[in-house]
Image (cartoon, rainbow, N blue to C red; front, side):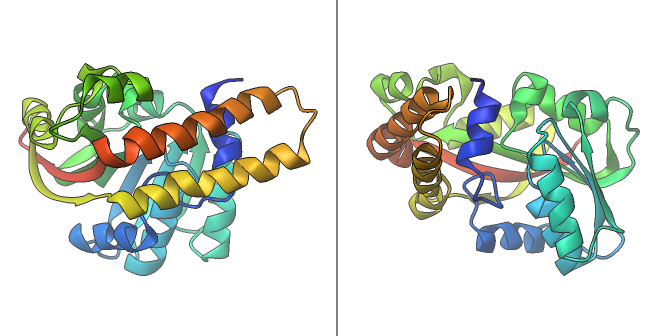
Length: 249
């Protein structure tokens, strides 16, 4: 069972597929000073909550791209539900490939929690540069380590220490990628809980409803690992935030 399939089950009850609460998602939109007519490209857009809510509240337009055959239809349904389907579109496909055909057409380009599409922060920033206008914004969602993260926390979470860095180190990585950090919205322990802990109930229900599924063993392990690592390591040592940047190119 692949990781995407696990997340499609675990996040079945989620609208926001990252540790931002609804309040912080809308705060991010306010911080970005969104206004009617602006266009946003959302790479790895998940269920499209950010683009749909911002279109509804701030009047923007845009496009989302995601590889999930579960999340993309959910995003399209959400656009209809909020009455913004005439202003936003969601495409099924590889976000990295999709952006290669863009030519600085968007006011905002976002990649929230999926910098793996470009092989890390630097590669993803390079992809995003291709689609954003000269005076536009890049929104990058990225984990970061607490300053005192011990090696056993990285090992327990299964994340190489070098994959992420501290909050100050994230600033260094952004600057090396040719970006100017101008704002940010960070998750806290409570918003982590709402993202991670809320999955436990969903997966528990799924296991009760599908005890004989060939995926049951993998999902049970996912649930057990998620509970233990979140409580022991993730909530304390792994930060997460959306960094609002301008390009200096």
